[in-house]
Image (cartoon, rainbow, N blue to C red; front, side, top):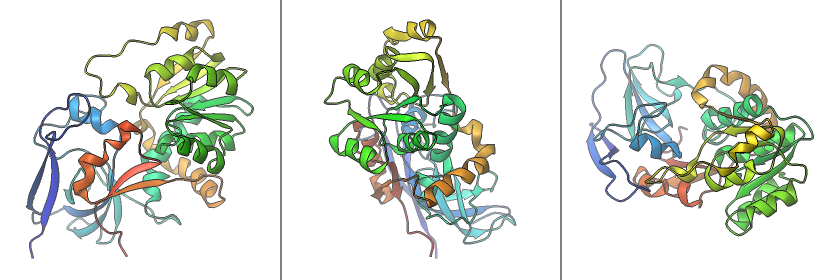
Length: 337
């Protein structure tokens, strides 16, 4: 019996935030497999701030072409295979796209090992999220016990892990997030020492209160005004991890540079960007620590699930208005039994 593949295709370059009409819903038959090919049924689709970049411009990956299936990371299960490296039932991950099925040669798929974690952990704890938090903080930030670490989007997928890892390493951790509920979650459940609601509090004053000795490490997911306020209060030899700048992704004109950038010179600080793709080859090293921390209750993750592929264009907006908590994913189809 023939199957239909529902897809979201990029219809136009977004201007500002994603709008109705930026994506077009399409349906087409799932093609018969050729020799060496694999058919993947997508289970979870990852929604990420970089979706906005991929839709509009070349970056570390080329921009999605107009008319193509929207790019997105995903986890799926092999339904059919004419490739000896994959068997039906194998769980895989890759850039599967905003669609229900994906046909691959297998070269762009990673078979997930059988580990004692739920399947959604590959979205919220392991995978790109875990690698980003782990290597971004420990390799770029290089925190030392007793130092003060500040994390923006501290209730988000990456930020929530970063703060917990910093606590495991013996740091004082302050998180910035956008609601009282999220502030309570990161302090009471995740162990942050303090939380700042940037939508209600004066960020500069709150940072001075909670970081009286200055900021040694800042894990930056937002850029913009918050980055500028942090730069104003960095400690000597501070390290700033530039992971994302979501505050400017929907800007129609380039935002101005931070006025406090001179403090990088005065305080002999360092600001370094990184892309998680640089660390894929070291995934096993990361997982060897994350999984025992999770099993021991030292590291928690949360997934925020939108149901059905049809929900993706609306759900992705939650990344930009701050209404998601934890890792935002779409449940495209049921988990394999």
